[in-house]
Image (cartoon, rainbow, N blue to C red; front, side, top):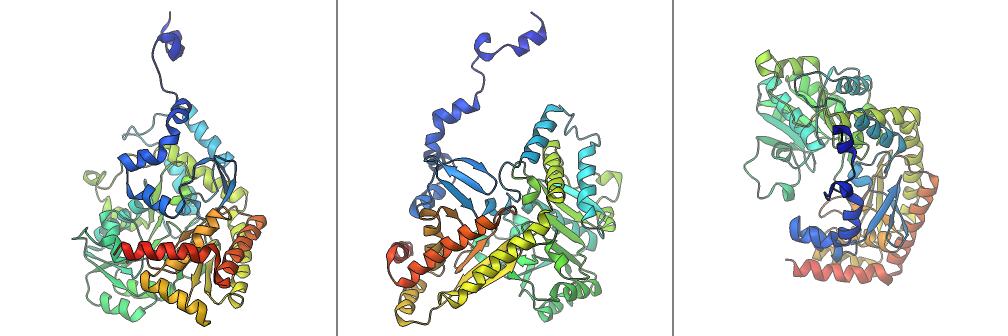
Length: 475
């Protein structure tokens, strides 16, 4: 028997067990929640069971997935923004099959493969004032790279961030996280200072101290869906340049079309960040990838000599599968005119939701851009609703938003999320490919839940009583 014949022999014929993923899932898939409880974050299954989110999803396509009973669910969360093109887009799937079948000599570490250069070229075409790209594995790693590059390029230690910002959870990105709940227990962190989003005076006061390397900012904050005020980014950029500091735009969630332009900072004329961080949707939902995009002079400061050629690197950075996924995603975005679709569909969804603010006194605001929309709830006017609202707020701020999220899933099979801890805001970041039928489905379901809440009874407030008891017991 030849070597080739031996290699092609089936596991059964050769007497070895081999590996059969389908068989493994069929045999052990039902143990999913028990496995997580035993070996992973034990609080996750506990939380999911508490709010009735312990579903068993078995299939997904586009903006929908199905449970083991065959019921379909509308995804208005997109895996926290990762599933920009929805799940299992055929072009991305084919690209990954193709790159695996090509048997490339990947990650030799001592050659220059074409795919990273091609993906960098594509990204830079959307950010023409920037020159070079570093590929890592996630959004938080893209932020870590930007923080390191800014400190190296300026020779300064301190990075400013905005209050309520979220830039990731590794130590460097956690240092510029504006929420204390994420930071508690992990000090000491890097030197940092928080300034209010939109407050130029506070920014200038810090810049005058002369030790600031950069300001990192989300053009639209993920926590609460708060947009930078008009003109703020341009004015902040001018202040930073005057004080020889850099502007870092965190576009991990807002980038790649999410807000109706390729980058969210492009909604304001004249804004040209020195460093831009992207990730999430670039993966196509398959292979983790992050990118730190920056100016030529910054990269040349970091990689200043051949001795420093690997001064910042990533073991899996620029791997062929991630690069193929990224190239396929950008190709789909161009071919299917995704950014234009986001503008149209996002405007439809936002305006239809905003029209409900006059109908529901518990609905305080609808805001956002493109398909990044925040729905905020607030203190009602009527005495009966106000007394119930007050009980919820006394137990824990954010319970009413959770009371809306739960029936959206349990009664209407729509997945959403509360935008942040202690926030009465639901954030909608659906796949960028949702259509008018999906908009109709969400608005109809949301209206039904709000009708129930305003009737003063029903399942919404029954669940609210359960949440209050749990919140009080957890103190």
